[in-house]
Image 1 (cartoon, rainbow, N blue to C red):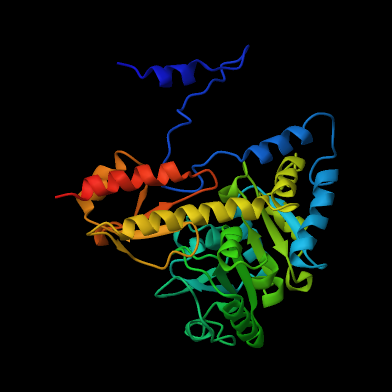
Image 2 (image 1 turned 120 degrees about the horizontal axis):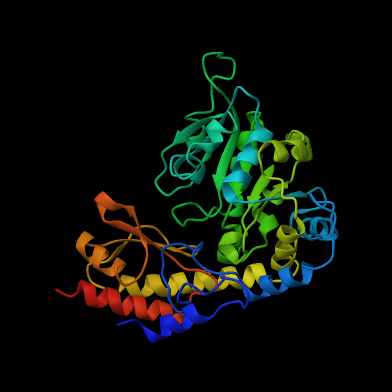
Amino acid sequence: MADPQALKHQAEAISGTDARRRHDPALRGFASDNYAGVHPEVLAALALANGGHQVAYGADDYTAHLQEVVRGHFGPSAQAFPVFNGTGANVLALQALTDRWGAVICAGSAHINVDEGGAPERVAGLKLLTVPTPDGKLTPELIDREAHGWDDEHRAMPQVVSLTQGTELGTVYTPQELREISEHAHALGMRVHLDGSRLANAAASLDVPMRAFTNAAGVDVVSLGGTKNGLLYGELVVVLSPDAVGPMKHLRKLSLQLASKMRFVSVQFEALLAGDLWLRSARHANTMARRLADGARAVEGVELCYPVQQNAVFARLPHDVSERLQKRFRFYFWDEPAGEVRWMCSFDTTEEDVDAFLAALREEMRP
């Protein structure tokens, strides 16, 4: 028998179109912070930016004002380049920092290496030099494993160190750690790129402003995430060291990342960054992850794999339990042979969501 509530949602439609609600908005999961919808304050900002005509391709009032907002977070030399998505932001940033013969040193677990379909290498035309890490974090010593051979024409030249804050394993660099890495990279003649798809979560975790581990730490370019923190779509490439990059406007167009109606990307970031929405949302997601981790830690047979420092929880539990639990709540295996899973919280995760998941976990773990 059809669910009456689901039928009600399907019946909600926009008059005169075939647009209708085709999902149950009460359905929640822990697969990705990308699964969440758009924050209501961001939707309101989009509505304000609608109507009338604005100059296309970034010459609009919203994109102009966004530059002031971004400089307030990242210093007077910061320049923001709105783009469509995270992979595009990373590819554009790395392309701007490297020559055709250049290479980028990154953690083996880095998103640019594991989850971007080879785009940095195929589109940007660079070589990734990966380093295994125990917790997703690079160190000067780990970087030195690949930071060599600049005069060897048979080897791609290391030109950039790419870091992720927070990392793909949910861990977070301290400002001092990032400062030491930047100083080390710069001393070797390399630039530093920071993949910040969850930069707000890292700042909330450390209780420091984003500048503390970006421009103040010597980072040259940041890929600043918005989608994972309540935006409809859009990311920013934030150039902190203008002398370190190539002609960004031309590179952005060449990389298929120039939005014609850019005001609708820029106004979202204005809503996110001009006040404290970015921090409120990130703090909430982090708090829900800690609640989830504390509850899961108390369940016999569940092992947490890494410190819970932002909105991600990595756990190890029996494979059959995970498969049964996935039928009740969406989440992904991280390392399926090892029984490792990842649970993500977002700006709209509630205490009730977490507690319902924990109740299901305890039920499925019972012998």
